[in-house]
Amino acid sequence: MAQTGRETVPVASSAVPMNAWTFSATVDGYVVPNGDSYVSPIFTADHNWLHLEGRYNYEDQRTGSFWFGYNFKRGEKLSVVVTPMVGGVVGDTTGVAPGYEVSVTYKKIWVYSTGEYVFDVKNRNGSFFFNWPEGTYSPWNWFHVGLAAQQTKVYRKDLTTDRGFLASISHKNVWFTTYVFNVASPSRIFLLEVNARF
Image 1 (spheres, helix red, strand yellow):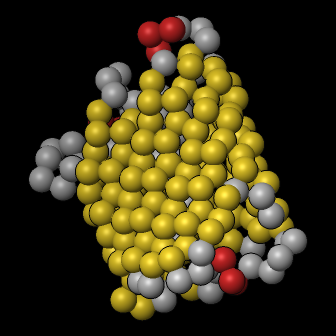
Image 2 (spheres, rainbow, N blue to C red):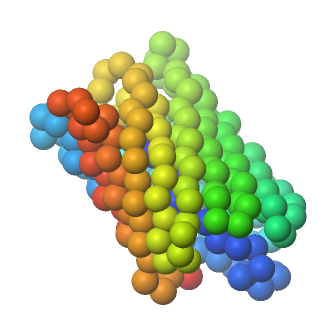
Image 3 (cartoon, one colour):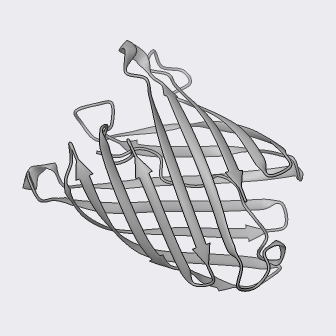
């Protein structure tokens, strides 16, 4: 099963000293119909090419995943970061998952996508592909708006795609983001996110 899979905060590569560790902590709070609301924390650590990540309630509820990846970074004015990854998934869903994260930044525009294919080792029919694309425009450094989508099974039996909007503000190294999916539908979903980088 799957949920969000991304860090929503673009960071210029020039802001990070060479050979330094960078960390992020994200907490996603999902408000979904029928009382299925839940929280999903995501932690990352990066050092040069090395990317490490831990997630909970991401591929499925009551499920954790642990990731190892390689960061490829190119460009300054047009910045591209590609991170192929492999992860182990344990809990209500158990398996192995190759995945990726890709971000492209150009001036005030940021495009991001993350995805993974979970090979469920307990139930072959439980294997699935997850994808989260997102694009934002930042009129000011402390504010951005955009579009996002998620393909998830965390709070449904069937894999479906939710599409929606986002708005985000920052204070120092902390970002506060609100997502609204399925705006015109009774199955409207709210995602409240806090992301800190240090």
